[in-house]
Length: 427
Image (cartoon, rainbow, N blue to C red; front, side, top):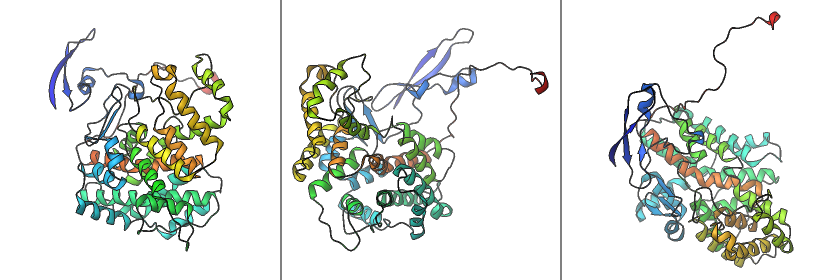
């Protein structure tokens, strides 16, 4: 990373020299920290033009439609790797060899059970409690079992925490689902793959053998991979901010879950299914396509285009393949899924959408796959959180492993100047 210089001139101040870093990939970054000592700071609502940290984990180029994890393209990882390899990569910086992968997978499988007492926590939730609320509470409760043993300044302790979270999130997520439908929790099975175990805990029953389709298991594994990390998004930034105070890492991850719960962040694939419900029938597609093209109509095609990717979502093509494989494997006769496939075909061939690069994104296809598997929309964001935990904990570990400061944004104050207090009887 090379450095350049920039000069900032502000009326009433001497010229200020600032360093400019040239990253491995991406835009040059002006270091504005010295401005505070000069009585100045920057105004950047939503941090759209601010690099809040230095990271070597994930890189996104929205113009090119590029997503790299530790330098590897998401397309290659999703089509040639599996989630356990991606977890190892994000945590350690390199892909594992066969021996390393086996050891890592064995470590994860050894931690898939949750404390028995924690299961009682779910009894305090209503059956119709939102699964994300249950998941946040369960992760927070999990922290009470490990709080005294965590030394965030010790690399081995941080690794143990990371493995523990990656291992237990599928179990907690499945418990959220089972509680919501009033069924007994299904014990995790170490003889199954990560995705197979999760599917078995969702849909299986204790004491029963349930065959899991390899096509379905691969699709779920790809959903995990494609949502594993996405750079400095709202939830990842939240985890870093929480972690910067020295907070328990379980608390930091729970804060990330809370941020992901927001519909502007983690609810996109759920919004796709809600949109399909609104359209209702294949017969109504033309009407809703016209509404989507009408600037004066509030209707939006959910799952098309992406805020970050201005060309195409690199995760979408991989998920599209799995989506069609799952629908073919299951042979589901569902009008909603027929509607989704018809909508996809029209959007991909319509010049209006092509010119504006409003192609189906990963949320469109993952929402359809999860729906086809019989997973309710209320669980979609829980599965997103399960997948993203490895990204969150990798960023937390990266931050704690290097010099850092507690996060403390500034503000542009527009309130009253100092004024005298008026006693109650005189107001």
